[in-house]
Length: 108
Image 1 (cartoon, rainbow, N blue to C red):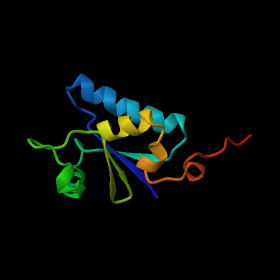
Image 2 (cartoon, one colour):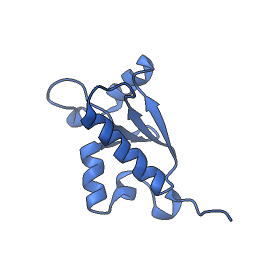
Image 3 (cartoon, helix red, strand yellow):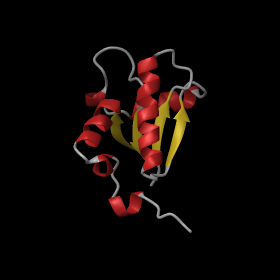
Image 4 (cartoon, rainbow, N blue to C red):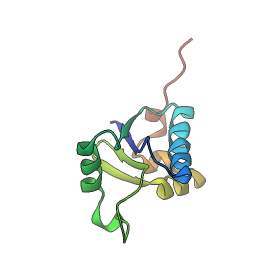
């Protein structure tokens, strides 16, 4: 199972950059393996992201903004969903992970 965070490395929006950093830092701090997918560098990846977000989760106007989070091909949610799960201490469930599977133990 691979957590994929779709980001935009060349976003001009400070808010988007902060949201992306918040997700990435949380995953790193909790030793959750993930892959960053930069949609500004790959039109194919951008189209895949747009196509795989459920219709009922799409914004009413425009395209969905990064970060968007997937577990393999399953859509987990956007930053707002991630933030809500972080606040309610349910991030592992949000990501479709069991806490014991998500974090690696440090090796001596």
